Image (tube, rainbow, N blue to C red; front, side, top):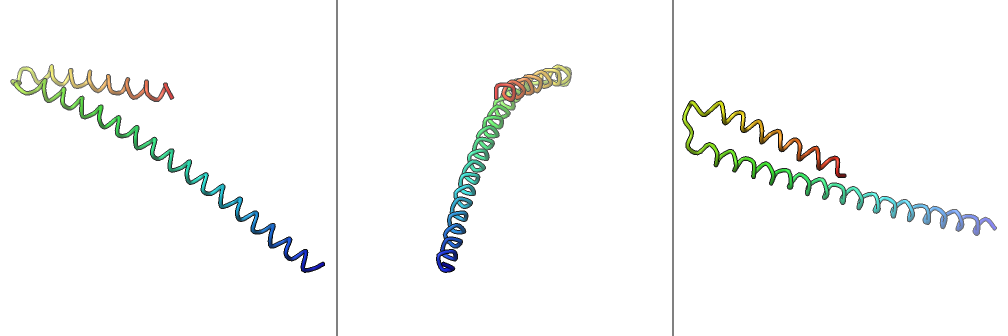
Length: 93
């Protein structure tokens, strides 16, 4: 009888460990998936920033000192558009 009890307790322990291991794997997979999604979002945002920098560079190729103030205003507009883009992305989730 005590052997049966000991084997039952060992089996229950192994079953518990197996379930806990599966839960850890699922949790780890979810975490990995979430990190992958975050990295993808970061890449999208970096691509958007690159596009904005290209726009700024194109707009500022042939500037003179009197146009600098207008460029700052335009840069602020691009930054505002980026912040709106970022806000819209977070609202769409």
